[in-house]
Length: 442
Length: 162
Image 1 (cartoon, rainbow over the protein chains, first blue to last red):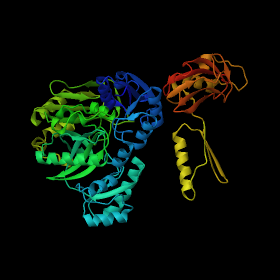
Image 2: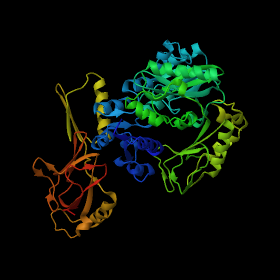
Image 3: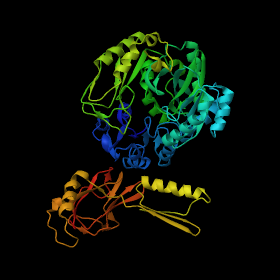
Image 4: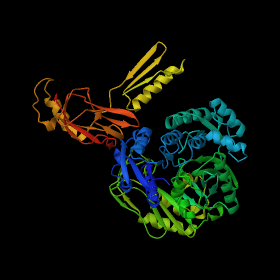
């Protein structure tokens, strides 16, 4: 097992990793920017080191400062969390070149998982269903037009290095494709330094279902009960639940087994997520996320397994501690991402003047915010993840309603009201919703 | 810090590579870059960034200096605390105050503009702490070979020209 791990991230995920390391008796070294020096997570690590000014490019994305911090603090592993450098193969490679373990898959696997057009092509050759679309990167708008004509409109243009809705355009007719292609390319280049685009059939009103997997270095792979992440705004997840009310046991098994095939195909190790679009009983592979995800607590509660501890142990070379039959669904869980944002989903920076977090039976809160914390314009505006769980879906939803009433945040605008509206919605209560749910909500 | 490179590509890509180098140079602490290929020899330079002034500590000194700064060579009239500034670490690494047996800085020592006061070893790259004026060292906050973080106070110095 590792002796000392550098946590190359900030906020709630840094705290989540620090907690896991402490429970495993592994020393932790937090990193922080100048803006985060007084953040709660810094004080809970065994050691903390400032790596740069507030701007993420100079701190949390600054590879040389982070590697230097790990070296001077004599760390033997680096945990990247999610976002920032988590899916940067170059970073994983540099960690290895300095003799430190990267807590995640290999650099080659990260690179492959990150090239969405390539991985789609790869899984397609193995007869795993994918949404019909281009074979790899599309060179120009004229080629995109040809592909769209063949697979029929509507189509979606996506950035090959993309995520979070950036570099993405839905096109409903030929007249719009040229402009959409140019805009998506410019956005992708700006966001990911990679203007590569691909085109695929746009599946109207699908469900976004993802399967958590865990894999050891001997090639054994496990899947966990699915998370339903269909409730999104601007292609970003808002509320997740697991298991999905819309997936039956037969489809669950099929999705799980397919996810394991994808993981094996790219020699995946540690924990990751395979995302699918599901339309009725048909499913299509979308992408593989080579990291621990924001919504991992849903699966942790549903299966009663600590995924972060498992990830660290797998990266240290340990075998999977359980078999597929040992993975159970012991409850239902819902997660609400509480963001500091206005009703148009625009981030709202400022100081949290007052913060009262919910508690009681069936409530878990993952946050690094306290009274007086600043929501910085430099970083993601998520304040907390509230996760509730119960014997069944109805109980976890009722607990979430109660938890959101207990939650008090003053000083910044939040999306608590949006979550309350979702939880009251008739279609949500019935479990009948797709990715256009928020857009169609009354 | 200086880095030399004889590597490069030919043709229209060369211009693009140079642009990229300039962009990278702008984002890093590298302050000088030499590029040679055939008859071509290009030197890119930017102002050294190894010295970071403590903002709070420096504000009053700068404001006062701006108002009352005598010409270079004239006698100091301001008290030392108004001529003081803090030099901070430009990187995470190991702080060095000596080179071999030579001590670069000591409390009370006067250092000429452009001379090195110390350096931070960050991943094997030397990030020098240079005197941006004629300085007198008032305090040294870190020991030789101490691990330092970004922005950590290293020196308090008095500007001899203020």
